[in-house]
Image (cartoon, rainbow, N blue to C red; front, top):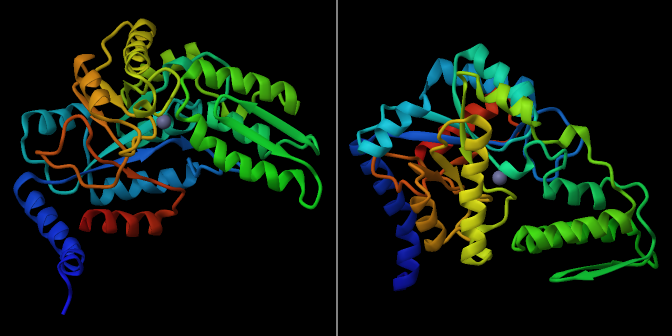
Length: 335
Ligand SMILES: [Zn+2]
């Protein structure tokens, strides 16, 4: 006979599914999809890129089988707590890569669809790679890695020597470890560390394949009927891991930056990284106080009319072909 805790763990998926079916029946369903990049690139350790041919297949399938909402329609249901139509989908993108303008926007326009693009405002027009991409360039795609290397600054520590193992293997381990540490640093410290690493590791040129949009590009992008702009902090920290003044500055300045560039109100926000470890009650309060209508998180789940307005779930989309995308959507939908 199962113990109390065994019984609980046996029942948990059943309770979850029953709740999912109940909520869907009463409050409808909307799958909010999370994309980052639409591009074909040779290396992608964060799995952020969806090939244009796959993105096109995704849009075709959505058009055939689902109902892709405009941002205004999504607002209507979430903010007024009105039941979402069956099979609703909202498209979202995080970060603000240049390929959002050159690849994703034309395909959205072709299919007559709209997406909500959450932009890390500091990167727009900076000519700099996003910090996780820069760390990848420095450590994983750098052909000139020194055989011996030691670096320690703040919580970031990395070292290797060529004895026994190659520098490349050490750099790969350092990359995985440092990503987690660097996301918790305030942007000033992270920048100083990257600057030092650029010099020491001899890799200073940003890859054009990994750039955010330039200012003029961003303005043209934001003028498309397929594009609605939301904020995503200035420099993409894990908000829950920096102090309250830093959180507030990152959140409010991203709204101000984007409004200044576009000359119109920016009403939406998404938490960088967006897992339960990346935002907390303070983050959520600042997001409300800053005046955002709603805020997206990044954990899987179907949105319905009673979902939390300031941390609703999204499904991460990977570089799936059409049939795999269809299978994944069916899995998402079952809850
Ligand atoms: Zn992001």
